[in-house]
Length: 131
Image 1 (cartoon, rainbow, N blue to C red):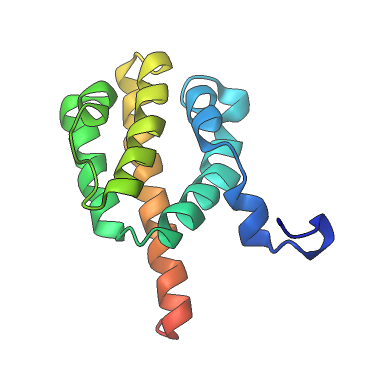
Image 2: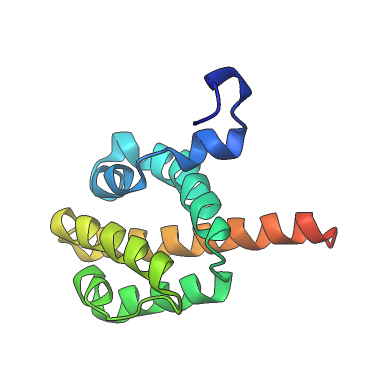
């Protein structure tokens, strides 16, 4: 049974965010960009952090997006080392590739992946009590 709305944590609320939709619109429409790089990046970080994704893995994928584009990165058999987060990221990238057809949108996607990686790193540092 899911927790009652009044007992849900911020992480649970953010994890319920539809990151794929934010990516599709946030990469191409200015009105959604703040939401993508704000709540969308945090929601993606919460979700991927729970799945054990390392920040450096996302930075690596960001480099692939820069070099080959979103569609190329989405087509990788293993964009991340573990199957479950790899499938999730592949879904996000596939959806984004369908709308982000310009080099500027793909550069934004790479920056967004780096932002998500930074948030994961900050979450981990905070949990470990390191600066």
